[in-house]
Length: 383
Image (cartoon, rainbow, N blue to C red; front, side, top):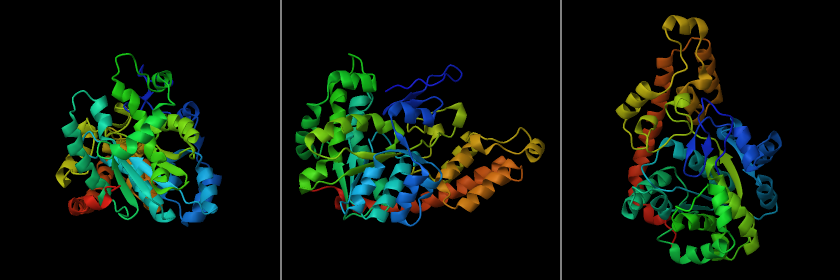
């Protein structure tokens, strides 16, 4: 679904599962997608069960939902939900991909629940002309390492690979597909007559993990899907269909995008295809340092003198924006914000704080990623 917000420098705003560009107005996305904003009442309900809110919730990084109250209603009755998220592999994982996964890991820990993680290897093959299936499947392996490195419980985490698990997924997908019209797909995704028929069918496959555990385990549990807001159109269709199969509407909790290094000069979100805009989980320390110093958009002033006098603008500074995603300590983040805004902290110093933060995170992540090579089989679902 293409969303045309107000024109900004005549640039169209587009938010679809395959393309995000323009100046993203999240309040308008809530309105146009028909989402509910996460409010204080919902935050307090979540906090009652988790003890402390994740900083992604405190800072509005996860900002919208569908039926999260129903998930909590059922949980409080003793009907524990399961989690579903995923990654369509087309390249190496970048740090923006980690945001919904880190939050999903927190949900798994706090609610002691099962996670079904989908790797739809056919999706990128169908949607990108320059990728063959073998390339995509090689990326499945690389992306799995990053998921495992985050520490998901292998006893409660099940990887579904669409081509590998087609035997159990396809029978359910055709039940979904039979209830979705071509006109619905065209209207939702903007497809034209030139679109290949595999892409038209794909959303039925993406719907399956939202109820497959109930099919396999003979249960009747609700599903919660943490994801970035651009994936909402797939699940909006799923919510119309899945209840007709006798299962709960999948609920969702949705996050904003981590911007690319170019910030307001690029707009949209971080993209795997733009190396200058992106930090990958496999980048070494020098690469991280070089990319941030060279490409991260600054909210600093033209000279040190002006910066000391006028202060920086943290709201447009990419280094500060990224720290809101990766610095957990609210007090530290506030001090960075205030020092930068008041001119006590220079742009280069702010970049160095981010460089150190990311390199410390990636150093540990890459060690765990290496160990994950021996653990993949523990996570792949075995029918």
